[in-house]
Length: 134
Ligand code: C2G
Image 1 (cartoon, protein in one colour):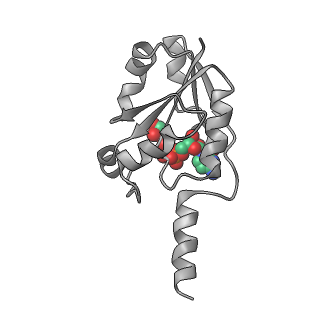
Image 2 (cartoon, helix red, strand yellow):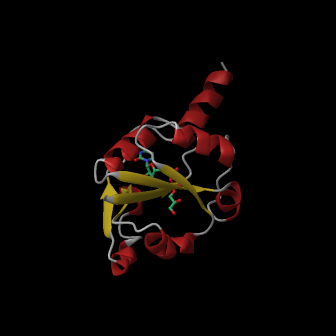
C-alpha cells in the first residue's frame, strides 16, 4: 500500500486541482490531502477562502482520487505527518519546486508536478468580478 500525501487550500475546486489530485493518486494506492484550515489560510497564507474548511473538505472527500482529508494547521507539520501517516510520496505543484526537498530526510519521495495552465482560484474570482460589471 503506497501512501501519497499532498497539501493545499483547494478553494473553489477546479479542474487544475483535479488534475493534480489525479496525478498524485496515480503515484500510489492511497491519497491523503492535508487541507489548509481557515485560520492557517488567513493567518499564514494570506488567503481569504470563498468556501470554509468544512465545505472544502466535503468537496475533496467527494473526489474519487481522495482517500482521506486531514487539516493543515501550520507549515511545520509536514515532517510529523510523514511519520504519523506512514507516507511514501509527497506531491505538490511545481510552483513549490525545491521548497519541500527536506522531506527526503524522512525517507519520503518528493514529487513536484506541473501546474495546469490558465486556471486558478484567483483567475476565477477576477473573471466573475469583471463579468459582474458588464
Ligand atoms: N494547482 C495546479 N494547477 C493549478 C492550480 C493549482 O496544479 N492551475 C495545484 C497546486 O500546485 C497545489 C494544489 O493544486 O499543488 C492546490 O493548490 P492551492 O490550493 O493553491 O495550494 P497552495 O495554496 O499552493 O497550498 O503547505 C503547502 C500549501 O498548503 C500549498
